[in-house]
Image 1 (cartoon, rainbow, N blue to C red):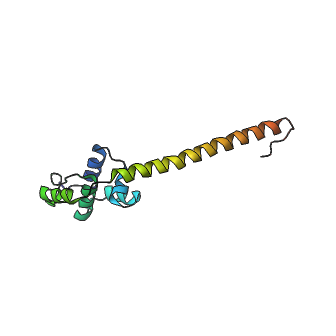
Image 2 (image 1 turned 60 degrees about the vertical axis):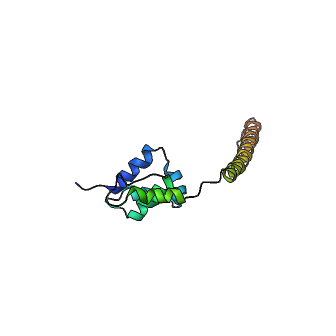
Image 3 (image 1 turned 180 degrees about the vertical axis):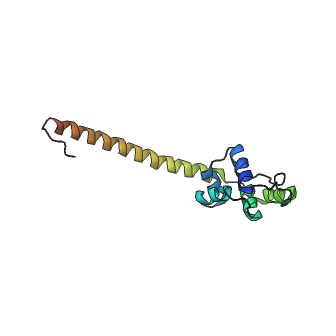
Length: 127
């Protein structure tokens, strides 16, 4: 029986709770690439390895013909931890601008609503 490499990788990704967007960001590829990988019967070992490293997941049990456990363990030891301080600052910055945007949208909707209501009594609805 032939293995469907893409389906196996997809099951691991989903079973471990990763979203496609998160995997794409960690693997430094676009989401479309991830979906294409999932649909492929055979994947290059480099792609499976890249996904494993991004997720810090050892694919040697799913693909013993391609990898040994040591292949992934070496990569995990050599990988740099994500700097949490910079990540927290980035999240705070994003949330600041998101909140500003939402506030502006709410203000705009209030102004728009007031304008429609004031024009409604005059018999026309120009905006």
